[in-house]
Amino acid sequence: MLEKNFLDAELPEELRTLLEACPGWEVPRDRDAILRLALNIGAGLAVNRAIIARNLRDYLPYMATENLMMAAVAAGGDRQAVHETVRQHSHAVTERIKQGVGIAAELFERLKAEKAFETLDFEALTEPAQFIGRAPEQVGEFIAGEVEPIRKRYPNRPIATATLTV
Image (cartoon, rainbow, N blue to C red; front, side, top):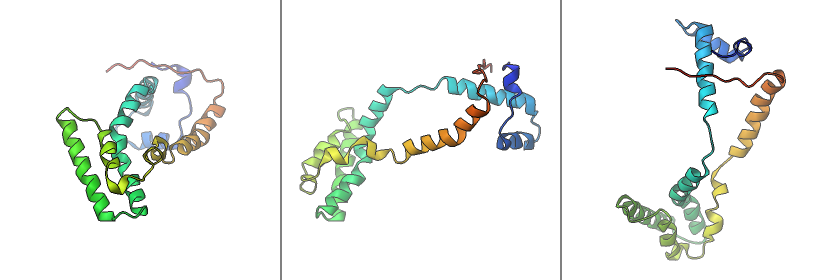
């Protein structure tokens, strides 16, 4: 059971409205279950840098092809020809990966050897930070707009823990 002071915490209006509008739900008990799940899931979150690095290694070459194609066209390449070159090499590398003999980074090596791509700065065009969009700003906005007001509203609230039993 969650600590009583945690259960008595005021829920955000949207969550309270949702819980109360769901037919058949017993709000106090179901709220407890939802909070238990949230705490259980949140407590287990961790950043696994090795997995992130592996995923980046495996998917960045494919994600970067759009930037590479746009740069190749800007450098004078024919759009259809550049796209076809990327498509052929992408399919070939993917087939090698499926056979267990290739790695995604081969796509960069293949494209570097093509005339349409030989003058491009692959390092600059494939910088991982180019592929995260507004994520840093969105995290900051979420923390400032959602998390900090709650932390200020309940400054002395102990960190809740819960045991999940299914």
